[in-house]
Image (cartoon, rainbow, N blue to C red; front, side, top):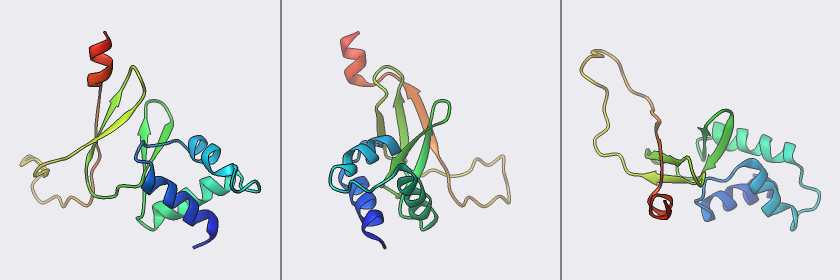
Length: 120
């Protein structure tokens, strides 16, 4: 683990806001002026391959980073753009897929979060 990888991983564990690569870069570059976005992208690839983080897709092409690797769902607010985690209870394959073996899953829900709905 390089200092850059440790920095990115620590940031994701301490900031459960599902940041973008740009957000991570902006947060870390002050303490590490030689840090580049390429380093962040390479670090994300390495940490993802190692199973330490996951990349979630929001909308068209936008990638958000998640330091929580335990299976859970994501709620995307279409108004504020925030991503919220939620627990999944007893998630399993439907009976219509007999013989299939689940190795991983992603649950994404889109809508309006409580805070934005209250403002409306």
